[in-house]
Image 1: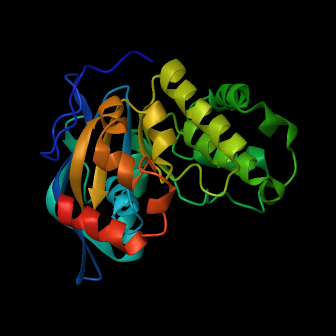
Image 2 (image 1 turned 180 degrees about the vertical axis):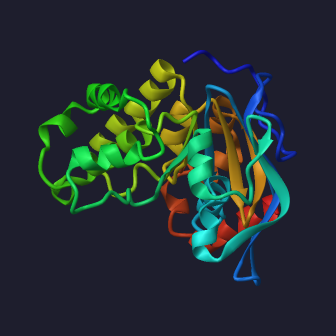
Length: 282
């Protein structure tokens, strides 16, 4: 992957991640569930063409809600964008139906994988191409198998795949839509450390070899920063810190709150850690 332009970690959230044009722009959005619960509070971020951008934060920070706002899936959970806008390739996409967003080139790999357990791996892959009507679906299935050779060997029902294989199938299904942007929600969830490294190696290859832009939500901040060129840190529905992955990896706040950089004695002080983080950033 080509090196990102040097940008220092910013304390003014929402700074542009690089000089190349943004494929995705999220501009000061607010998201409300059930007309009552405010989850995102003026969130802004950009994802440049051809880059991996990570979105980090504690549980409940609003990371998954951000992805659902982009992919149009808020409607399935009684949520909506009530302020701001979301633009993809310069065109506004907030408010349009999810299948139309897929056709424009955005595909979300959901948390928990969400494969169809009583369909075969091949049927799951074909399902990913539901918006397409071209004759190259078979060729693209072989392309997926080149990234995930184990899937070619697994001819039974997808529900019998291991957790790692199901994650590979979920990513492969996304590739079948020929996306320009993949939204990945917690790809390491429930996987062994060995499989986590393998999955993140594949994510890097997809970006380098296919040029796919990726917005990555991940609890494993260390792994996310190892593949991303830029990252945003969220707290309570807003961006509180952003910068290059290299700069955030050495940022003392990020090291303390997300990378475990201040010793084992800090681990038992969860409430204190949460309070200090809120006081310092919010």
